[in-house]
Length: 331
Image (cartoon, rainbow, N blue to C red; front, side, top):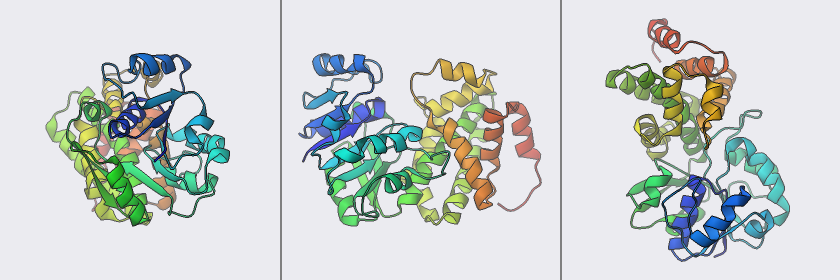
């Protein structure tokens, strides 16, 4: 099987290395020109995954054509807001039978589409037959260190899902299959918004009680939106929903929680972003989730307050007070 991985951030490099260690030759598209040489010669990604030895079977390149042409499987791991542009760029290089895996967790701001929706708008692929998404509680660094991890691979095509389950699974990386693509994608995207809220709570000095409340009520509003959009609410109680939510709201490696902590401590968002090397998807997803909640007429009070903090400079303490004192009703 010929495999290409688009994106050499921490997660893209990790998935490329996981597959390469299974014996596959992996073409890895690297955006930063100065990263190609160290990956090729020193077998390390010093910018995004320092200290992790990379397989000799990874071939880094700056050429999208080289990564995408004549491939049986492509794994996209680029930030959500550039996925459309990336798919437009690779469109002409794809074979008609290529299988595509989206490992990006986000919602496109302008269209409010999940990544599979963007794929289907841009690429000439059969609806759902060639497409899968990979999501779940999986910090890149821990997977790279072969820490036992479980994820979900979702596709409308269950034969494809089962095939990819075999492709990705290892003794330390277990993949479960699911047919609810939308639910899996919404879980992976929306949990980042709640993780920012959990970080804000931690930054304000609140305790475990507050965090537990945010996780629980966050899951409730995630599930409400997913159900309204046609997903299976039960999906949100699985790995791609609750599992990823717990990890991202509590883990020290969570970029979105880290953003929230800094906001809770009073830092300005512009300063936080200036100092960040990697993308915190929850920042852009918050706007998309807020817009979706209004469009679908779904109550999402935590998401709403995170939106006000990020995009309207609301004071985090005021946001918490408003959450706790709003009208009581069944939600």
